[in-house]
Image (cartoon, rainbow, N blue to C red; front, side, top):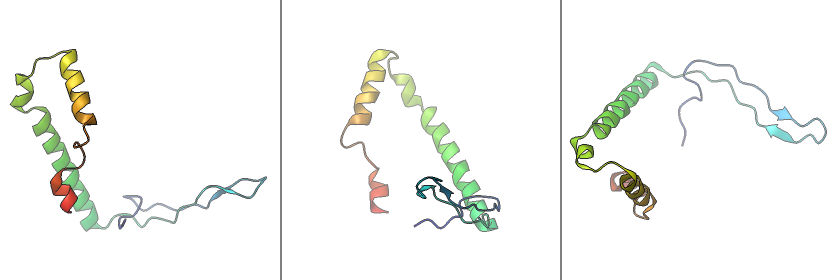
Length: 95
C-alpha cells in the first residue's frame, strides 16, 4: 500500500482531463499533496544514500576486473539477466 504523498513538497492537486466530445476521462485528476513529513523525508534521504553507496560498491567491486572485456561478456550478462531464476532476491521474497 502506498503511504507516501505523491510529492515531496506540498503541491496543489488538479482535476481530471475530460474528452470534450465523449465526456470520457482522458487523465484522472490528483488530490493535493501535503508533502513529506520530516520523518518521511529523512528516511527517503537515508534510503537514497544507501542505494548510491551500494551501487558504488557493486560497480567498483574487484570482481569486475577479473572478467575478460568484450562481446562475450555482454552476451553472458544478457543471458544471465534473462535466466528464469534471475528474479527477485530471496531476501525480498520473504518480505
